[in-house]
Image (cartoon, rainbow, N blue to C red; front, side, top):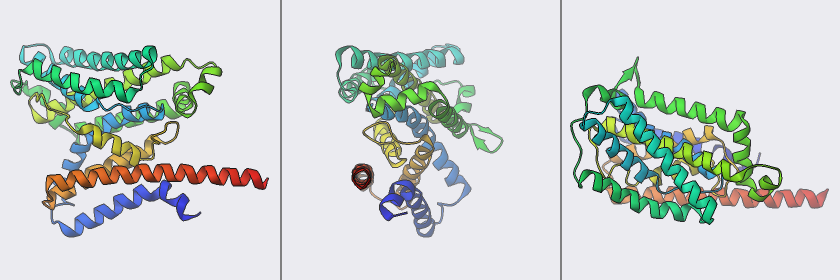
Length: 321
């Protein structure tokens, strides 16, 4: 197997192992049990959203409002809990809100034919404004202690958020790899027009995908609220960058129709390890932003280069035949 073929398939594994070795040698606390659990907790919110983003990107779209959805659902849940609403009911309301936001995105995309990235760019700003209106710009406190189990508790030795993340990844894998709707999502992202001609209801697929994405973003918002013990109107700000980067690093094509959710787990862990390691090394926050942006750019370049190389090889093989 040639190097150009190895990089897209195993490059992310090499990058993750390299980062772990580097940070283990340069910091004394990186490989401690406390820090490893801290990394796992940090990536759980990003990982849950990355599953939904994987669905969206496989369909050939992009949602950059995911951080704002996390924020607005977190403060909605916090406000309901503060006012004495039952925990289960408060969570259900926020999950339904996430689904409704996802359905709204799909509605605009389907009916007005506006690219999802434009719709979600506008929605990102609007939802962030809603979050600040709900809270008056102030954090919401008064969260019941029993609610904190979702973000801070353990089942055996496994943090609850991490367990929820892996359950979401497993369900996402089954949905994409073992069901008809999964094949429809891949087909829509690969060639939307061909999917329509083959009888696939592309619009319904988009409704489903964005609804799932909204649901998982809301779930992440609830877990984040439980972890920080307060409803912050700015919660989730900048998360869209880490979520998209994790997906692209995991092999999800920005053009749609290609990639496996199993790789996204590694991509998300790589982002988590990189962020944690830079913090432990005391690297300036602005340099951290530069590093993450560079990682995303390199991942996109590798994705595009590998697709171009694959196309040339296919043409060469066809000509030879």
